[in-house]
Image (tube, rainbow, N blue to C red; front, top):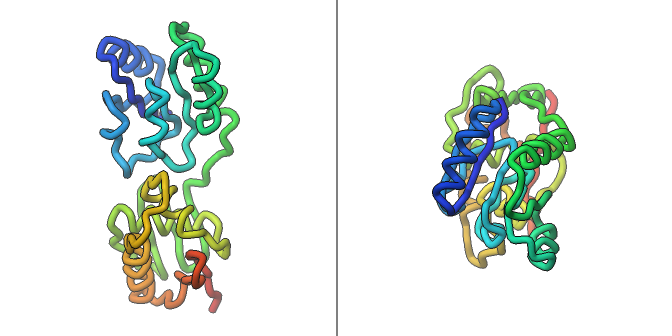
Length: 212
């Protein structure tokens, strides 16, 4: 079932869309404001009922469709960051067609990331290192998944803060990333995978699988 997050400020529109989308087979979570969206959610598609919400809402690796005014300038501004834009009033059937079009363009996501001694099962939200299941907090897990998706790629601090924590702009002085990376490194080391989380000084972090 396709997981869909809906942020729609107008109550009657939100109720209608939630009901109709659910009847069409979507697993819908709806909110009045993007500020209410759960940061740990991993939806397949995000529908925003307000173009201004793009400034406050980031869901990593998730296509976004905006429902907004018919103003051409507003459409152009929104499409600089969103994947699609649908002007009000709109046909519900067109919204569903556009959602399916976005999902078709999205590359399939591997549910299991197998790095040999480290296996991440995203469907079960389970991480196993050398046969030992790791207990990871929400953002520790999200950080490890991000690094494991492209091992040996160096992700910048800005990329990780944006994609894992949803920061739209860099926050000087924050140690959030460093503290989480340190905990993930320690938990992997305790399971026998020492040195897997690598800090590339002045740039960011990568995951470097080692072979025995």
